[in-house]
Length: 309
Length: 150
Image (cartoon, rainbow over all chains, first blue to last red; front, side):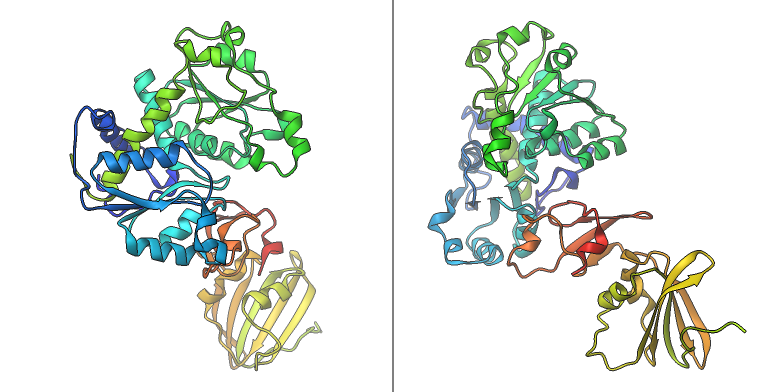
């Protein structure tokens, strides 16, 4: 599979075969991501990180990935220090960043921003989250985590929990899991239900998701519990946010209902939805999941820039 | 004798079987406005075998049938008839193209295509009957397409 020069905008741009190939390459990257082995396959290449919205894990793991591959990083983590403040259009910012670097990673508050960026950039563009839209590299690292922890993606019953309406990671993930034929259960407060078009897409792929608001019941048959934060910044008003925040909480009491080999994932940051007491249990894999961002993003950066190990 | 509501035209294009009430939207999509120089007749809510329909007749102008395909967004059953010397020389049922560019605005207020960027709105047709389109940029599907015509 050749991804050289390809944009990574949406998980839907990839076939299952292509995803498998990226996951396989990601596995090869693990010792390099841990600093146990060294490589300079992207020496002389420059990455622009354009973060118009806050990020910790995504930005740091992209920067770590590029550095681990021998490349260099330029960019900003705060649009206040850029010409966007002076009214510059995104397309102009992209043209400029494209001329300064070989690959662009962008996070932007507006849906479709990465797709637009790809139109104006000659070099590849990687979407690091566009508003409530897509976050394909998170989706790939989530799949990679399930694959490494459960040895396969298919045949798992995956419970997606929390903010399924505004949470961009769960939309891409539901689609990708359906592509693999995994069972899906959506658990959320009524006002934060998974959008209809996402479940329609799953059905088109032959997977009929179950909807429930009862977490105790859903967790009994779960192989993977994917927890999301109720995101204050995506709510139109504070009243609606206050009504639903804290409605679900994962703690050791709840885990009494769980299978022995249940894994708990979370894209992080978490606030109150997972009690810190869960961190010490064998179920918790969310910090491993965060680490997995590095090998997966190393594989993606290498692939789109034509680097080979 | 059957009385015609609007006279036949000698040369030009007749767009027939437009969904009743949508003739003005069809003209808008085709860019036919008061500054256009040719004569246009519009009949609305005309009785037909299948209920009511609208008809548009454009005199002395042969519209490219494929250019007209985009009106399928608001008039999926329309037909295009090219008229020469009072005879129909070409007939074509509209069919939605695979992409709709610059005609419909995205219903998502935070879609980048609604920001001040130098791009036209762009939709991918995911189903032709019933019509379903999704924004190329944000992937949302507008529910009421006819209300989103720019």
